[in-house]
Figure 1 (cartoon, rainbow, N blue to C red):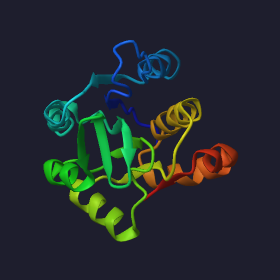
Figure 2 (cartoon, rainbow, N blue to C red):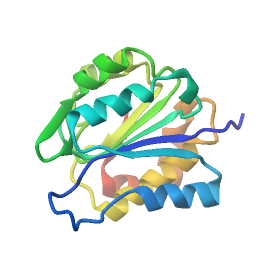
Figure 3 (cartoon, rainbow, N blue to C red):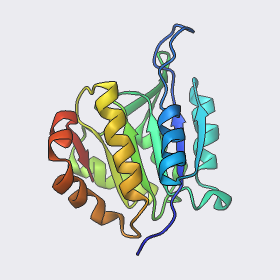
Length: 184
């Protein structure tokens, strides 16, 4: 069954320089123009900004935004809105508190979900997410953006998010291997 899914994207600062122009926003604009996927996009540089918008992802008026796209620097079990702030997966799960039921969450960040299976299960249970995905190692920005676009587009077509990993593994094995993508 095909359903409409929208993207709710939070993106951190990648560099301390105000000249840095890296962003996933053009990718979202492309998906909106070519795949008819709506999106909400917010840039967050502080822990407080991230938490403010994280709360918005849980509101019923945004229930159609079922693809939570978190684009940040990362390390195992953490994301960093900027060089001076970080949040753990436990921090995120505690705030979400089960309100991502039926949603997919994708960490477009290096290593954030390089965690053990038990920690992944706890994060899914704590958030209520149906699918959690991300990268186990360092990723090239372009390779990550390509896979992120494919993931968002493929996820948009399925009521059951459990079908998405098998579809990606079948159609994009080389890109999955190159980016060291995983899911739980």
